Length: 411
Image (cartoon, rainbow, N blue to C red; front, top):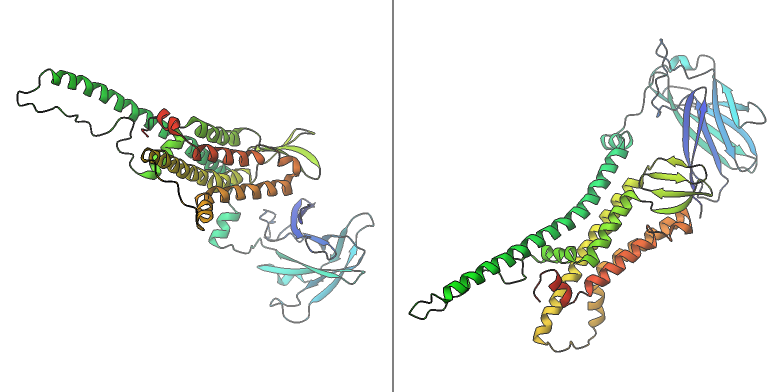
């Protein structure tokens, strides 16, 4: 599959211009970029001492491309400032047979009445097959620009690269830091309980030697049982501590988050058929070792944490909680559940979360294949994430009594 959107840019007399084109339709493909006058959407300091844009020359210039023979190229200019009445039609001539540059001279005195504000011209391209396309270009002589709305101004005119890099680093720190905090909390609580039990046993041994004459037994004053968390009675927090303290679950998630932050994601085909190494820090072309800007890589990493990592932690916590409940219920030897028509629905509902996450990761593999080719799917960023989600869920859902006892939970 090949991309259908292209960007054509050009330099003309020191002025940079570009336009985007969508070639997804099967109709003849035509592209035209007006290089003079300079499009008003590009901010550039090219005003002269008279306040007129010095990049506007005596001719209208445009680059025109087509996959069929071009019959004619013309430019349409409004005959009045209010763009009323019939437009002025100018035929554009090709400057030479070896370049796609077309030119047309401005009408005499046409620009004198348009020294301020925004104005529009239209380039009309006609092919010999009869197909025509129109391309619009807004320009100004005094540097006027079409105002953006507030949110459009923030999105389009802001440098999002450092912001997205910090957000990606914060998301990675949130994943690793939350798991580390839960492990530290578990260690502190279990150690404190063990120390408290030793002190209580010493105290009881002393009191047994000094039993009162009325025969009152000495009872334990401890408020928490061995191997339990005294204040982690909330199920979500308790379940998150279960997967955070299980090395077989926590370590792969931590390593995957750090891997995405520092190491390459995948190999891929970019800029035609050039092999490159894609990572959060940019795209490295392997043929000449050129490093391209990361552009959207940090935002992709943020979306990965938001749509996959954090939901996966919630699904794993829920699975560990179900496993703990299942192991505790074995003490009472409950009767085996009876099969019914609702059994398949219960199974689907129980595993719906991981099914949605695996579906999203499979869609991400398709996007990788579409953007970078099949080689990118067989990578840690492709099938590696699928394996991580499936393997950690299997381990969380299959936790046994020895796993809970290893992290200080009495079953």
